[in-house]
Length: 309
Image 1 (cartoon, one colour):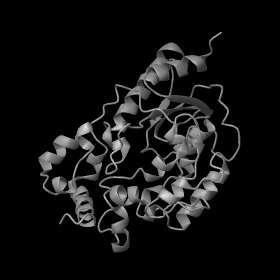
Image 2 (tube, rainbow, N blue to C red; image 1 turned 135 degrees about the horizontal axis):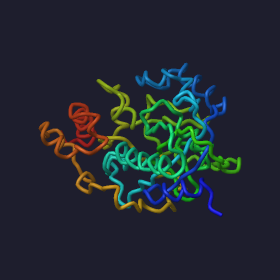
Image 3 (cartoon, rainbow, N blue to C red; image 1 turned 135 degrees about the vertical axis):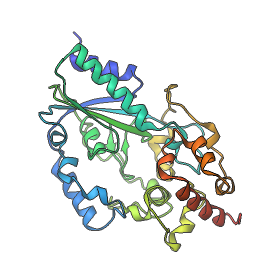
Image 4 (cartoon, rainbow, N blue to C red; image 1 turned 90 degrees about the vertical axis):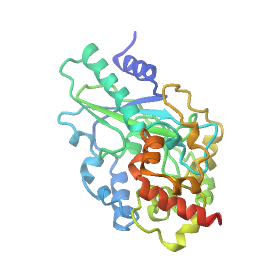
């Protein structure tokens, strides 16, 4: 006999999600909260001051929705067969925020029409204060690797996450069996250009190329400019080095639009961009949020690194 949980998962997967798991809205393991507070106290969050806000909400889904009972966690595989090397793979696709939100709203409509008419829910996609990797790990979607990304043994860590917090009581899934899935592997640590990943699993955003090229505003420290190399927006080095990603399949969702024209952008091209050029190329892209000025800053560093100017 099919359960409500089975129907939810079938609906989510028919909407295009590759992974679906269910967990309770109870607080996340206190060890995650303790580690996060220690990380913040060490200043490893760089200029991402918002991470120090709503800390209790971040680790307690029930504080984001009154009377919350369950969290439906989803993941979308975005692995590209042709990674750029200059632009993070997720930014080669359309903006995932809207794509995932739309499908989570469809799932909420399904729950309201088929299961619970007075359904209350909150959708979280990256921007909400929720420790999404920790909650997805508890829902059985994967484990958090040394690169600090949620990693599924079959699909790897090219995963975009989304959550639907709801007042609907559901049977939770079990997390993966507890073990060290990374073991003695240090490939992501060795591959990180800036040395942001340490062996003690402490991540320093201030040395991360993705942070520097996307989140960091203003000038980039001189000693880190050479580490950026040719990365215009983000960095996939730690992900590409992971053995789980070597065998993982590529994105199979044909509705998730891929923009091949973003693959081989040159710094010299971007430096000549007008605002209209930028808007036309990145209208439906996570790059849009970064803005032309910051992208040109990155392009100038890349061009100098490659002795193009």
